[in-house]
Image (cartoon, rainbow, N blue to C red; front, side, top):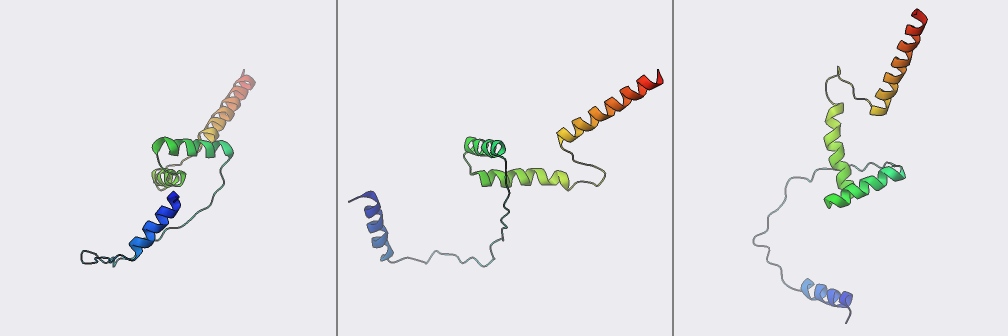
Amino acid sequence: MTTSNRNRAAAEASADAPIDWAGATVETAPAAASVVYSTRLDADLARRLVAQAERRGIKPAALLRELVAQGLPAYETNDDEATVRLADLRQAVQTLARTIETAARRAA
């Protein structure tokens, strides 16, 4: 008998066994609703996500939930604060530096 046949036979045998519900509790509160969001990741980002999830022993979806939960508060802070991508900040600094250099050359 194969493993799957043994598992099936065991499941069928236990299905007929009586169940003692004396210690059971009834859940009266509704379960919290969850929402599914679908997103596309480039191949490199997807590989990094999977690798990090495997290192932590969790599924990539669980890691995504954790990352969103950790990162979202940064977007919910005061309106006086802004969150920008590091690449955008670097580009703005480089543009500003070129503008200052150009103005200094013209003034000389």
